[in-house]
Image (cartoon, rainbow, N blue to C red; front, side, top):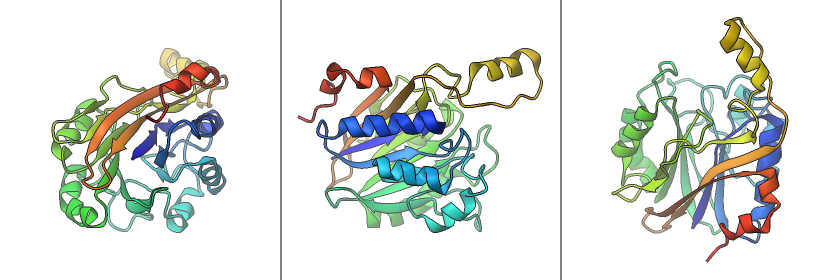
Length: 274
């Protein structure tokens, strides 16, 4: 069963890229579940009810989160009311929302989707490694297939999590840096892994933001308001082929395609179901 994980969705261009990609994927590859990181989906920071509905209507099944999930005032009420929107599970007790859930794919297969946050350069949530150790036995009782979004800054922390959980989860997709890494692989224990899935957002940008504002911050070291860049959208992510019975991963296929490439028939030959 193919599970599609889409990298951080950034603003309107990111939502457009997701919609375009999923609409063109229909009939090309049978995808059982679509997961996307949505913490930057509303104007580049946070998420709102309207934005979540737009992504669900486009074909996303589950939205994972990260450190920006609360940046819009609508974030907390949405986390309370919508089980398909997750925030990092390893935040302290009492934080609103859910960090994981079981969702059924189009085939009826149950998938556990887990959102976790790293700690290096990202504040001080509870230890994600110990959270996984404590909770995975319960999660595995509910679903053989477990997909983890590990939202972290440091590549070393993501790689360490992959080594720690290899064979205990089906797939690990790193998020947060918005730059897709070139290390998609099957780990020895049968876990599919990529350090960062990349971004769904404007291609000609600095991780989704208008370059002029970012350059002003770097060159002048003064406070600068970042705006989501305009221009051609791109969609980045990874396909994981999961065994619905045992939960292992059989194949990992990353991708990064611009809107222009989405309109080419040659692009979709790469994704054709066997």
